[in-house]
Length: 235
Image (cartoon, rainbow, N blue to C red; front, side, top):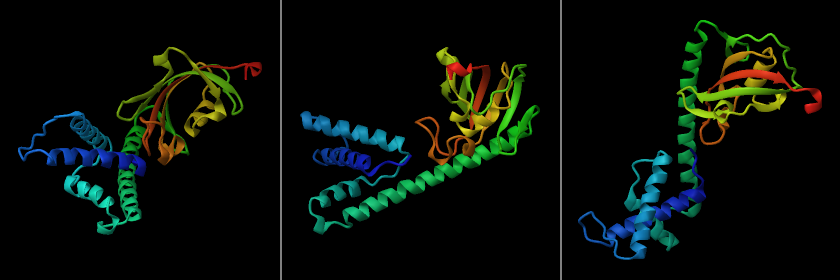
């Protein structure tokens, strides 16, 4: 996850207030919340801790964090300029994102290699994989058609990120208006079919990911039931 500089500034403020609160008390390692500002400072410390965990940042030097905030009040005494600080933060989180993306892609590549060798799984020239659960007998939709489907989407670790099945309501959308892996599969599926799709990231959301659940480089698994092609007057 790349944390914006604005969000990081909020995190830093919380962290410094927490450190300052601790340093203003005795050296026992336990702070005393004597007033509203003490409580606010401690609460901000809890919040910064949670934010750092979500951002997968560990090993923060809280003394350096507090010193950076103090020096910000006297720029001439600082160890770096605001611009240099911004660059360091951006570089760190960009590197973390690249490492996470590479790990996700390696894991996905291994999954697809193993999955492609399983009985019944077909791999197309694009890298899309699918397995026919039920073969329908209806017409196959065209790129310009709109279809009604039921689907259940998960990551390769089983995390559900979207499901019309769970909502109890089929979805309707243009065949050409969805991710590439879906479009490629739909034009091959006769109405009435149920397929399981295994969609590599370059046929899904790529390095940008989508929402909170689908990270960069994620391979997606969908159970798809093609219910019908909508009449042209409904499109």
